[in-house]
View 1 (cartoon, rainbow, N blue to C red):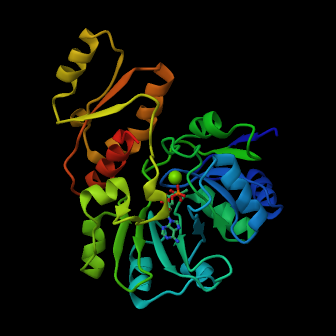
View 2 (spheres, protein in one colour):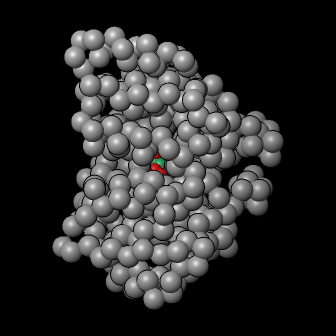
View 3 (tube, rainbow, N blue to C red):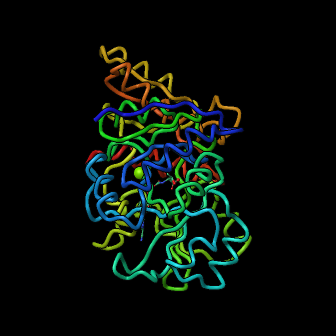
Length: 319
Ligand code: TXA
Ligand code: MG
């Protein structure tokens, strides 16, 4: 298949391109587009054949469900049940990088559905123009770091999807926070741009899986979220996590043994937000450079640091 490539200005997306993308989605095709978190690979959520194409293009395990994207809570309330807790969070953080797992009203699809309202102008325009809810995982090959630029999407999926819309680098650089509310108790499944502290400010109690569960995706034998049991965010070379300020020293030891080393000194970044925005791009660059090992400095697990460390631990998993 030939993939159509289009560039849009995120501040004022070209309506001709948006219409073309919406047409593809309405006809059961796949379009990759920017969101404020990472690039998504979108299809009509209620067209099972279109959704099956997403799994095929990404080589995604069939038991890992997708997030449904709408432009408002109203858009989504025909497919999921909003509790008062869910409404409170939606009012506080939508549009934005928070995904809520809620009881499904369309049980033919699933018992629960993860839903999110993106804030990015391009995603919003495509949802509005296509007139359907859009199922969209991150637009990478399964297991690879999520794409934060259109070039990352092209590297993984060119020729396997209908269209890639380039709207520049994704602002946040990490996927949305996933919060499970389907039992009535809030449970964090994936830390992200809406931080634990921000959630606690609105609803108080949030259950957090143990640190190693969050990284390994284990809750006893049951994965917390189907997506958590798979190795993720993984560049080709092994990732070694080291303390802040230690990267150069440890890299040196590897270099002495003749290894080519990718070095990510997170302690040199001005803020954790910038580190988050650049993380996946840097990991992908190390693949391009074909390094033999990647040394990354850990960050404090506060605010967005919790999401960064979650992704780093998964990238460092050896399974
Ligand atoms: O920021 C994001 O969330 C991006 C953009 C494109 O919106 N999307 C994204 O989708 O990261 P994906 O498929 O790469 O990650 C979705 C995560 C997976 O870990 C999946 O297992 C979990 O959400 N998930 C989806 N539906 C779920 C459900 N019903 N119950 C529990 N977890 C669910
Ligand atoms: Mg993903």
